[in-house]
Image (tube, rainbow, N blue to C red; front, side):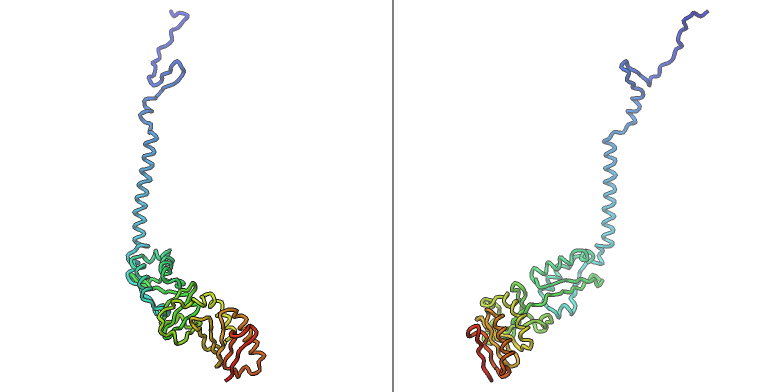
Length: 290
C-alpha cells in the first residue's frame, strides 16, 4: 500500500550539464574547447595563403615578361641611323652617345618611356635635337631617326659655317648636311678668314638683335644677295641689286624706313651704288652713284 506521498523516480544526472548556484551553464565546455580554432591560427592560414598567391603571381609575371616585354628577341644589340638622319646632321659623337644609351635595353620598354629618355639624354649635349623616333627592325636591331630644330641663322667665316640657335648655341657644320640650306646667312669680311671659332663674335651685336633684325631685313630687302656683318664693329652691309646699303646696330627700324622713303620718292634711285643710312643724322642719307 502506497502512502499519500510518492517518492520521485531516480533520474541520472548528465555529466554534460552542470548548473551552479549562480545560474551559469557550463554544459559541453570541454568538447568545444578542443574543437575551437584560435584567431591567431586563422590569421596565419590567411597570410600563408596570400604569400603563396604572391609567389605564384610573381613567377607568372616574370614568365610573361620574359616571353613578351623582356623577350631576348627584343634585346637591342644593333643600332642603325638611316640616310635621312645622316644627311641632316652627320655627327659621329651624337650617334655614339645614342648607341651607348640604347644598347642592352629592350625595345618594348623603349616604346613605353625610353624614347623620351633618349631624347633627354642627347639634349644634354645637343639641345637642338627636336625629337627621336625608334623603330624595331627585328633581329635585335633598331633604327633611330633624329629631328632637329632649324637654326635661327648661320654665320659664315671664310670657308667655315656655324649654326646658331637660341642662347648662342653654336656648332660648325659640314656643307654636305641638309639642315642649314634654308637658313639666313650672316657673312663676314675676308679679314676674319683666319678665325677658327666664334669667340667674341656677339660682343658688339648680341644674339637677341639678330633675332629681332633678321625678319625686318628680309622684309625690306626681299632680293638681297648677301648680308655682311663687319665683325668687331656695330655695322652691317646689305648687297641687293648691285647696291651696297650700310646699316647700323641701333635704331634699325628708322633706318629701314628711310630706305623705303628713298626708294619710293628718289627719282634716281636706280642709279645709286651705295646708300649709307647711318653715318649722318637720323634725317639724312648719304648716297653714291655709279
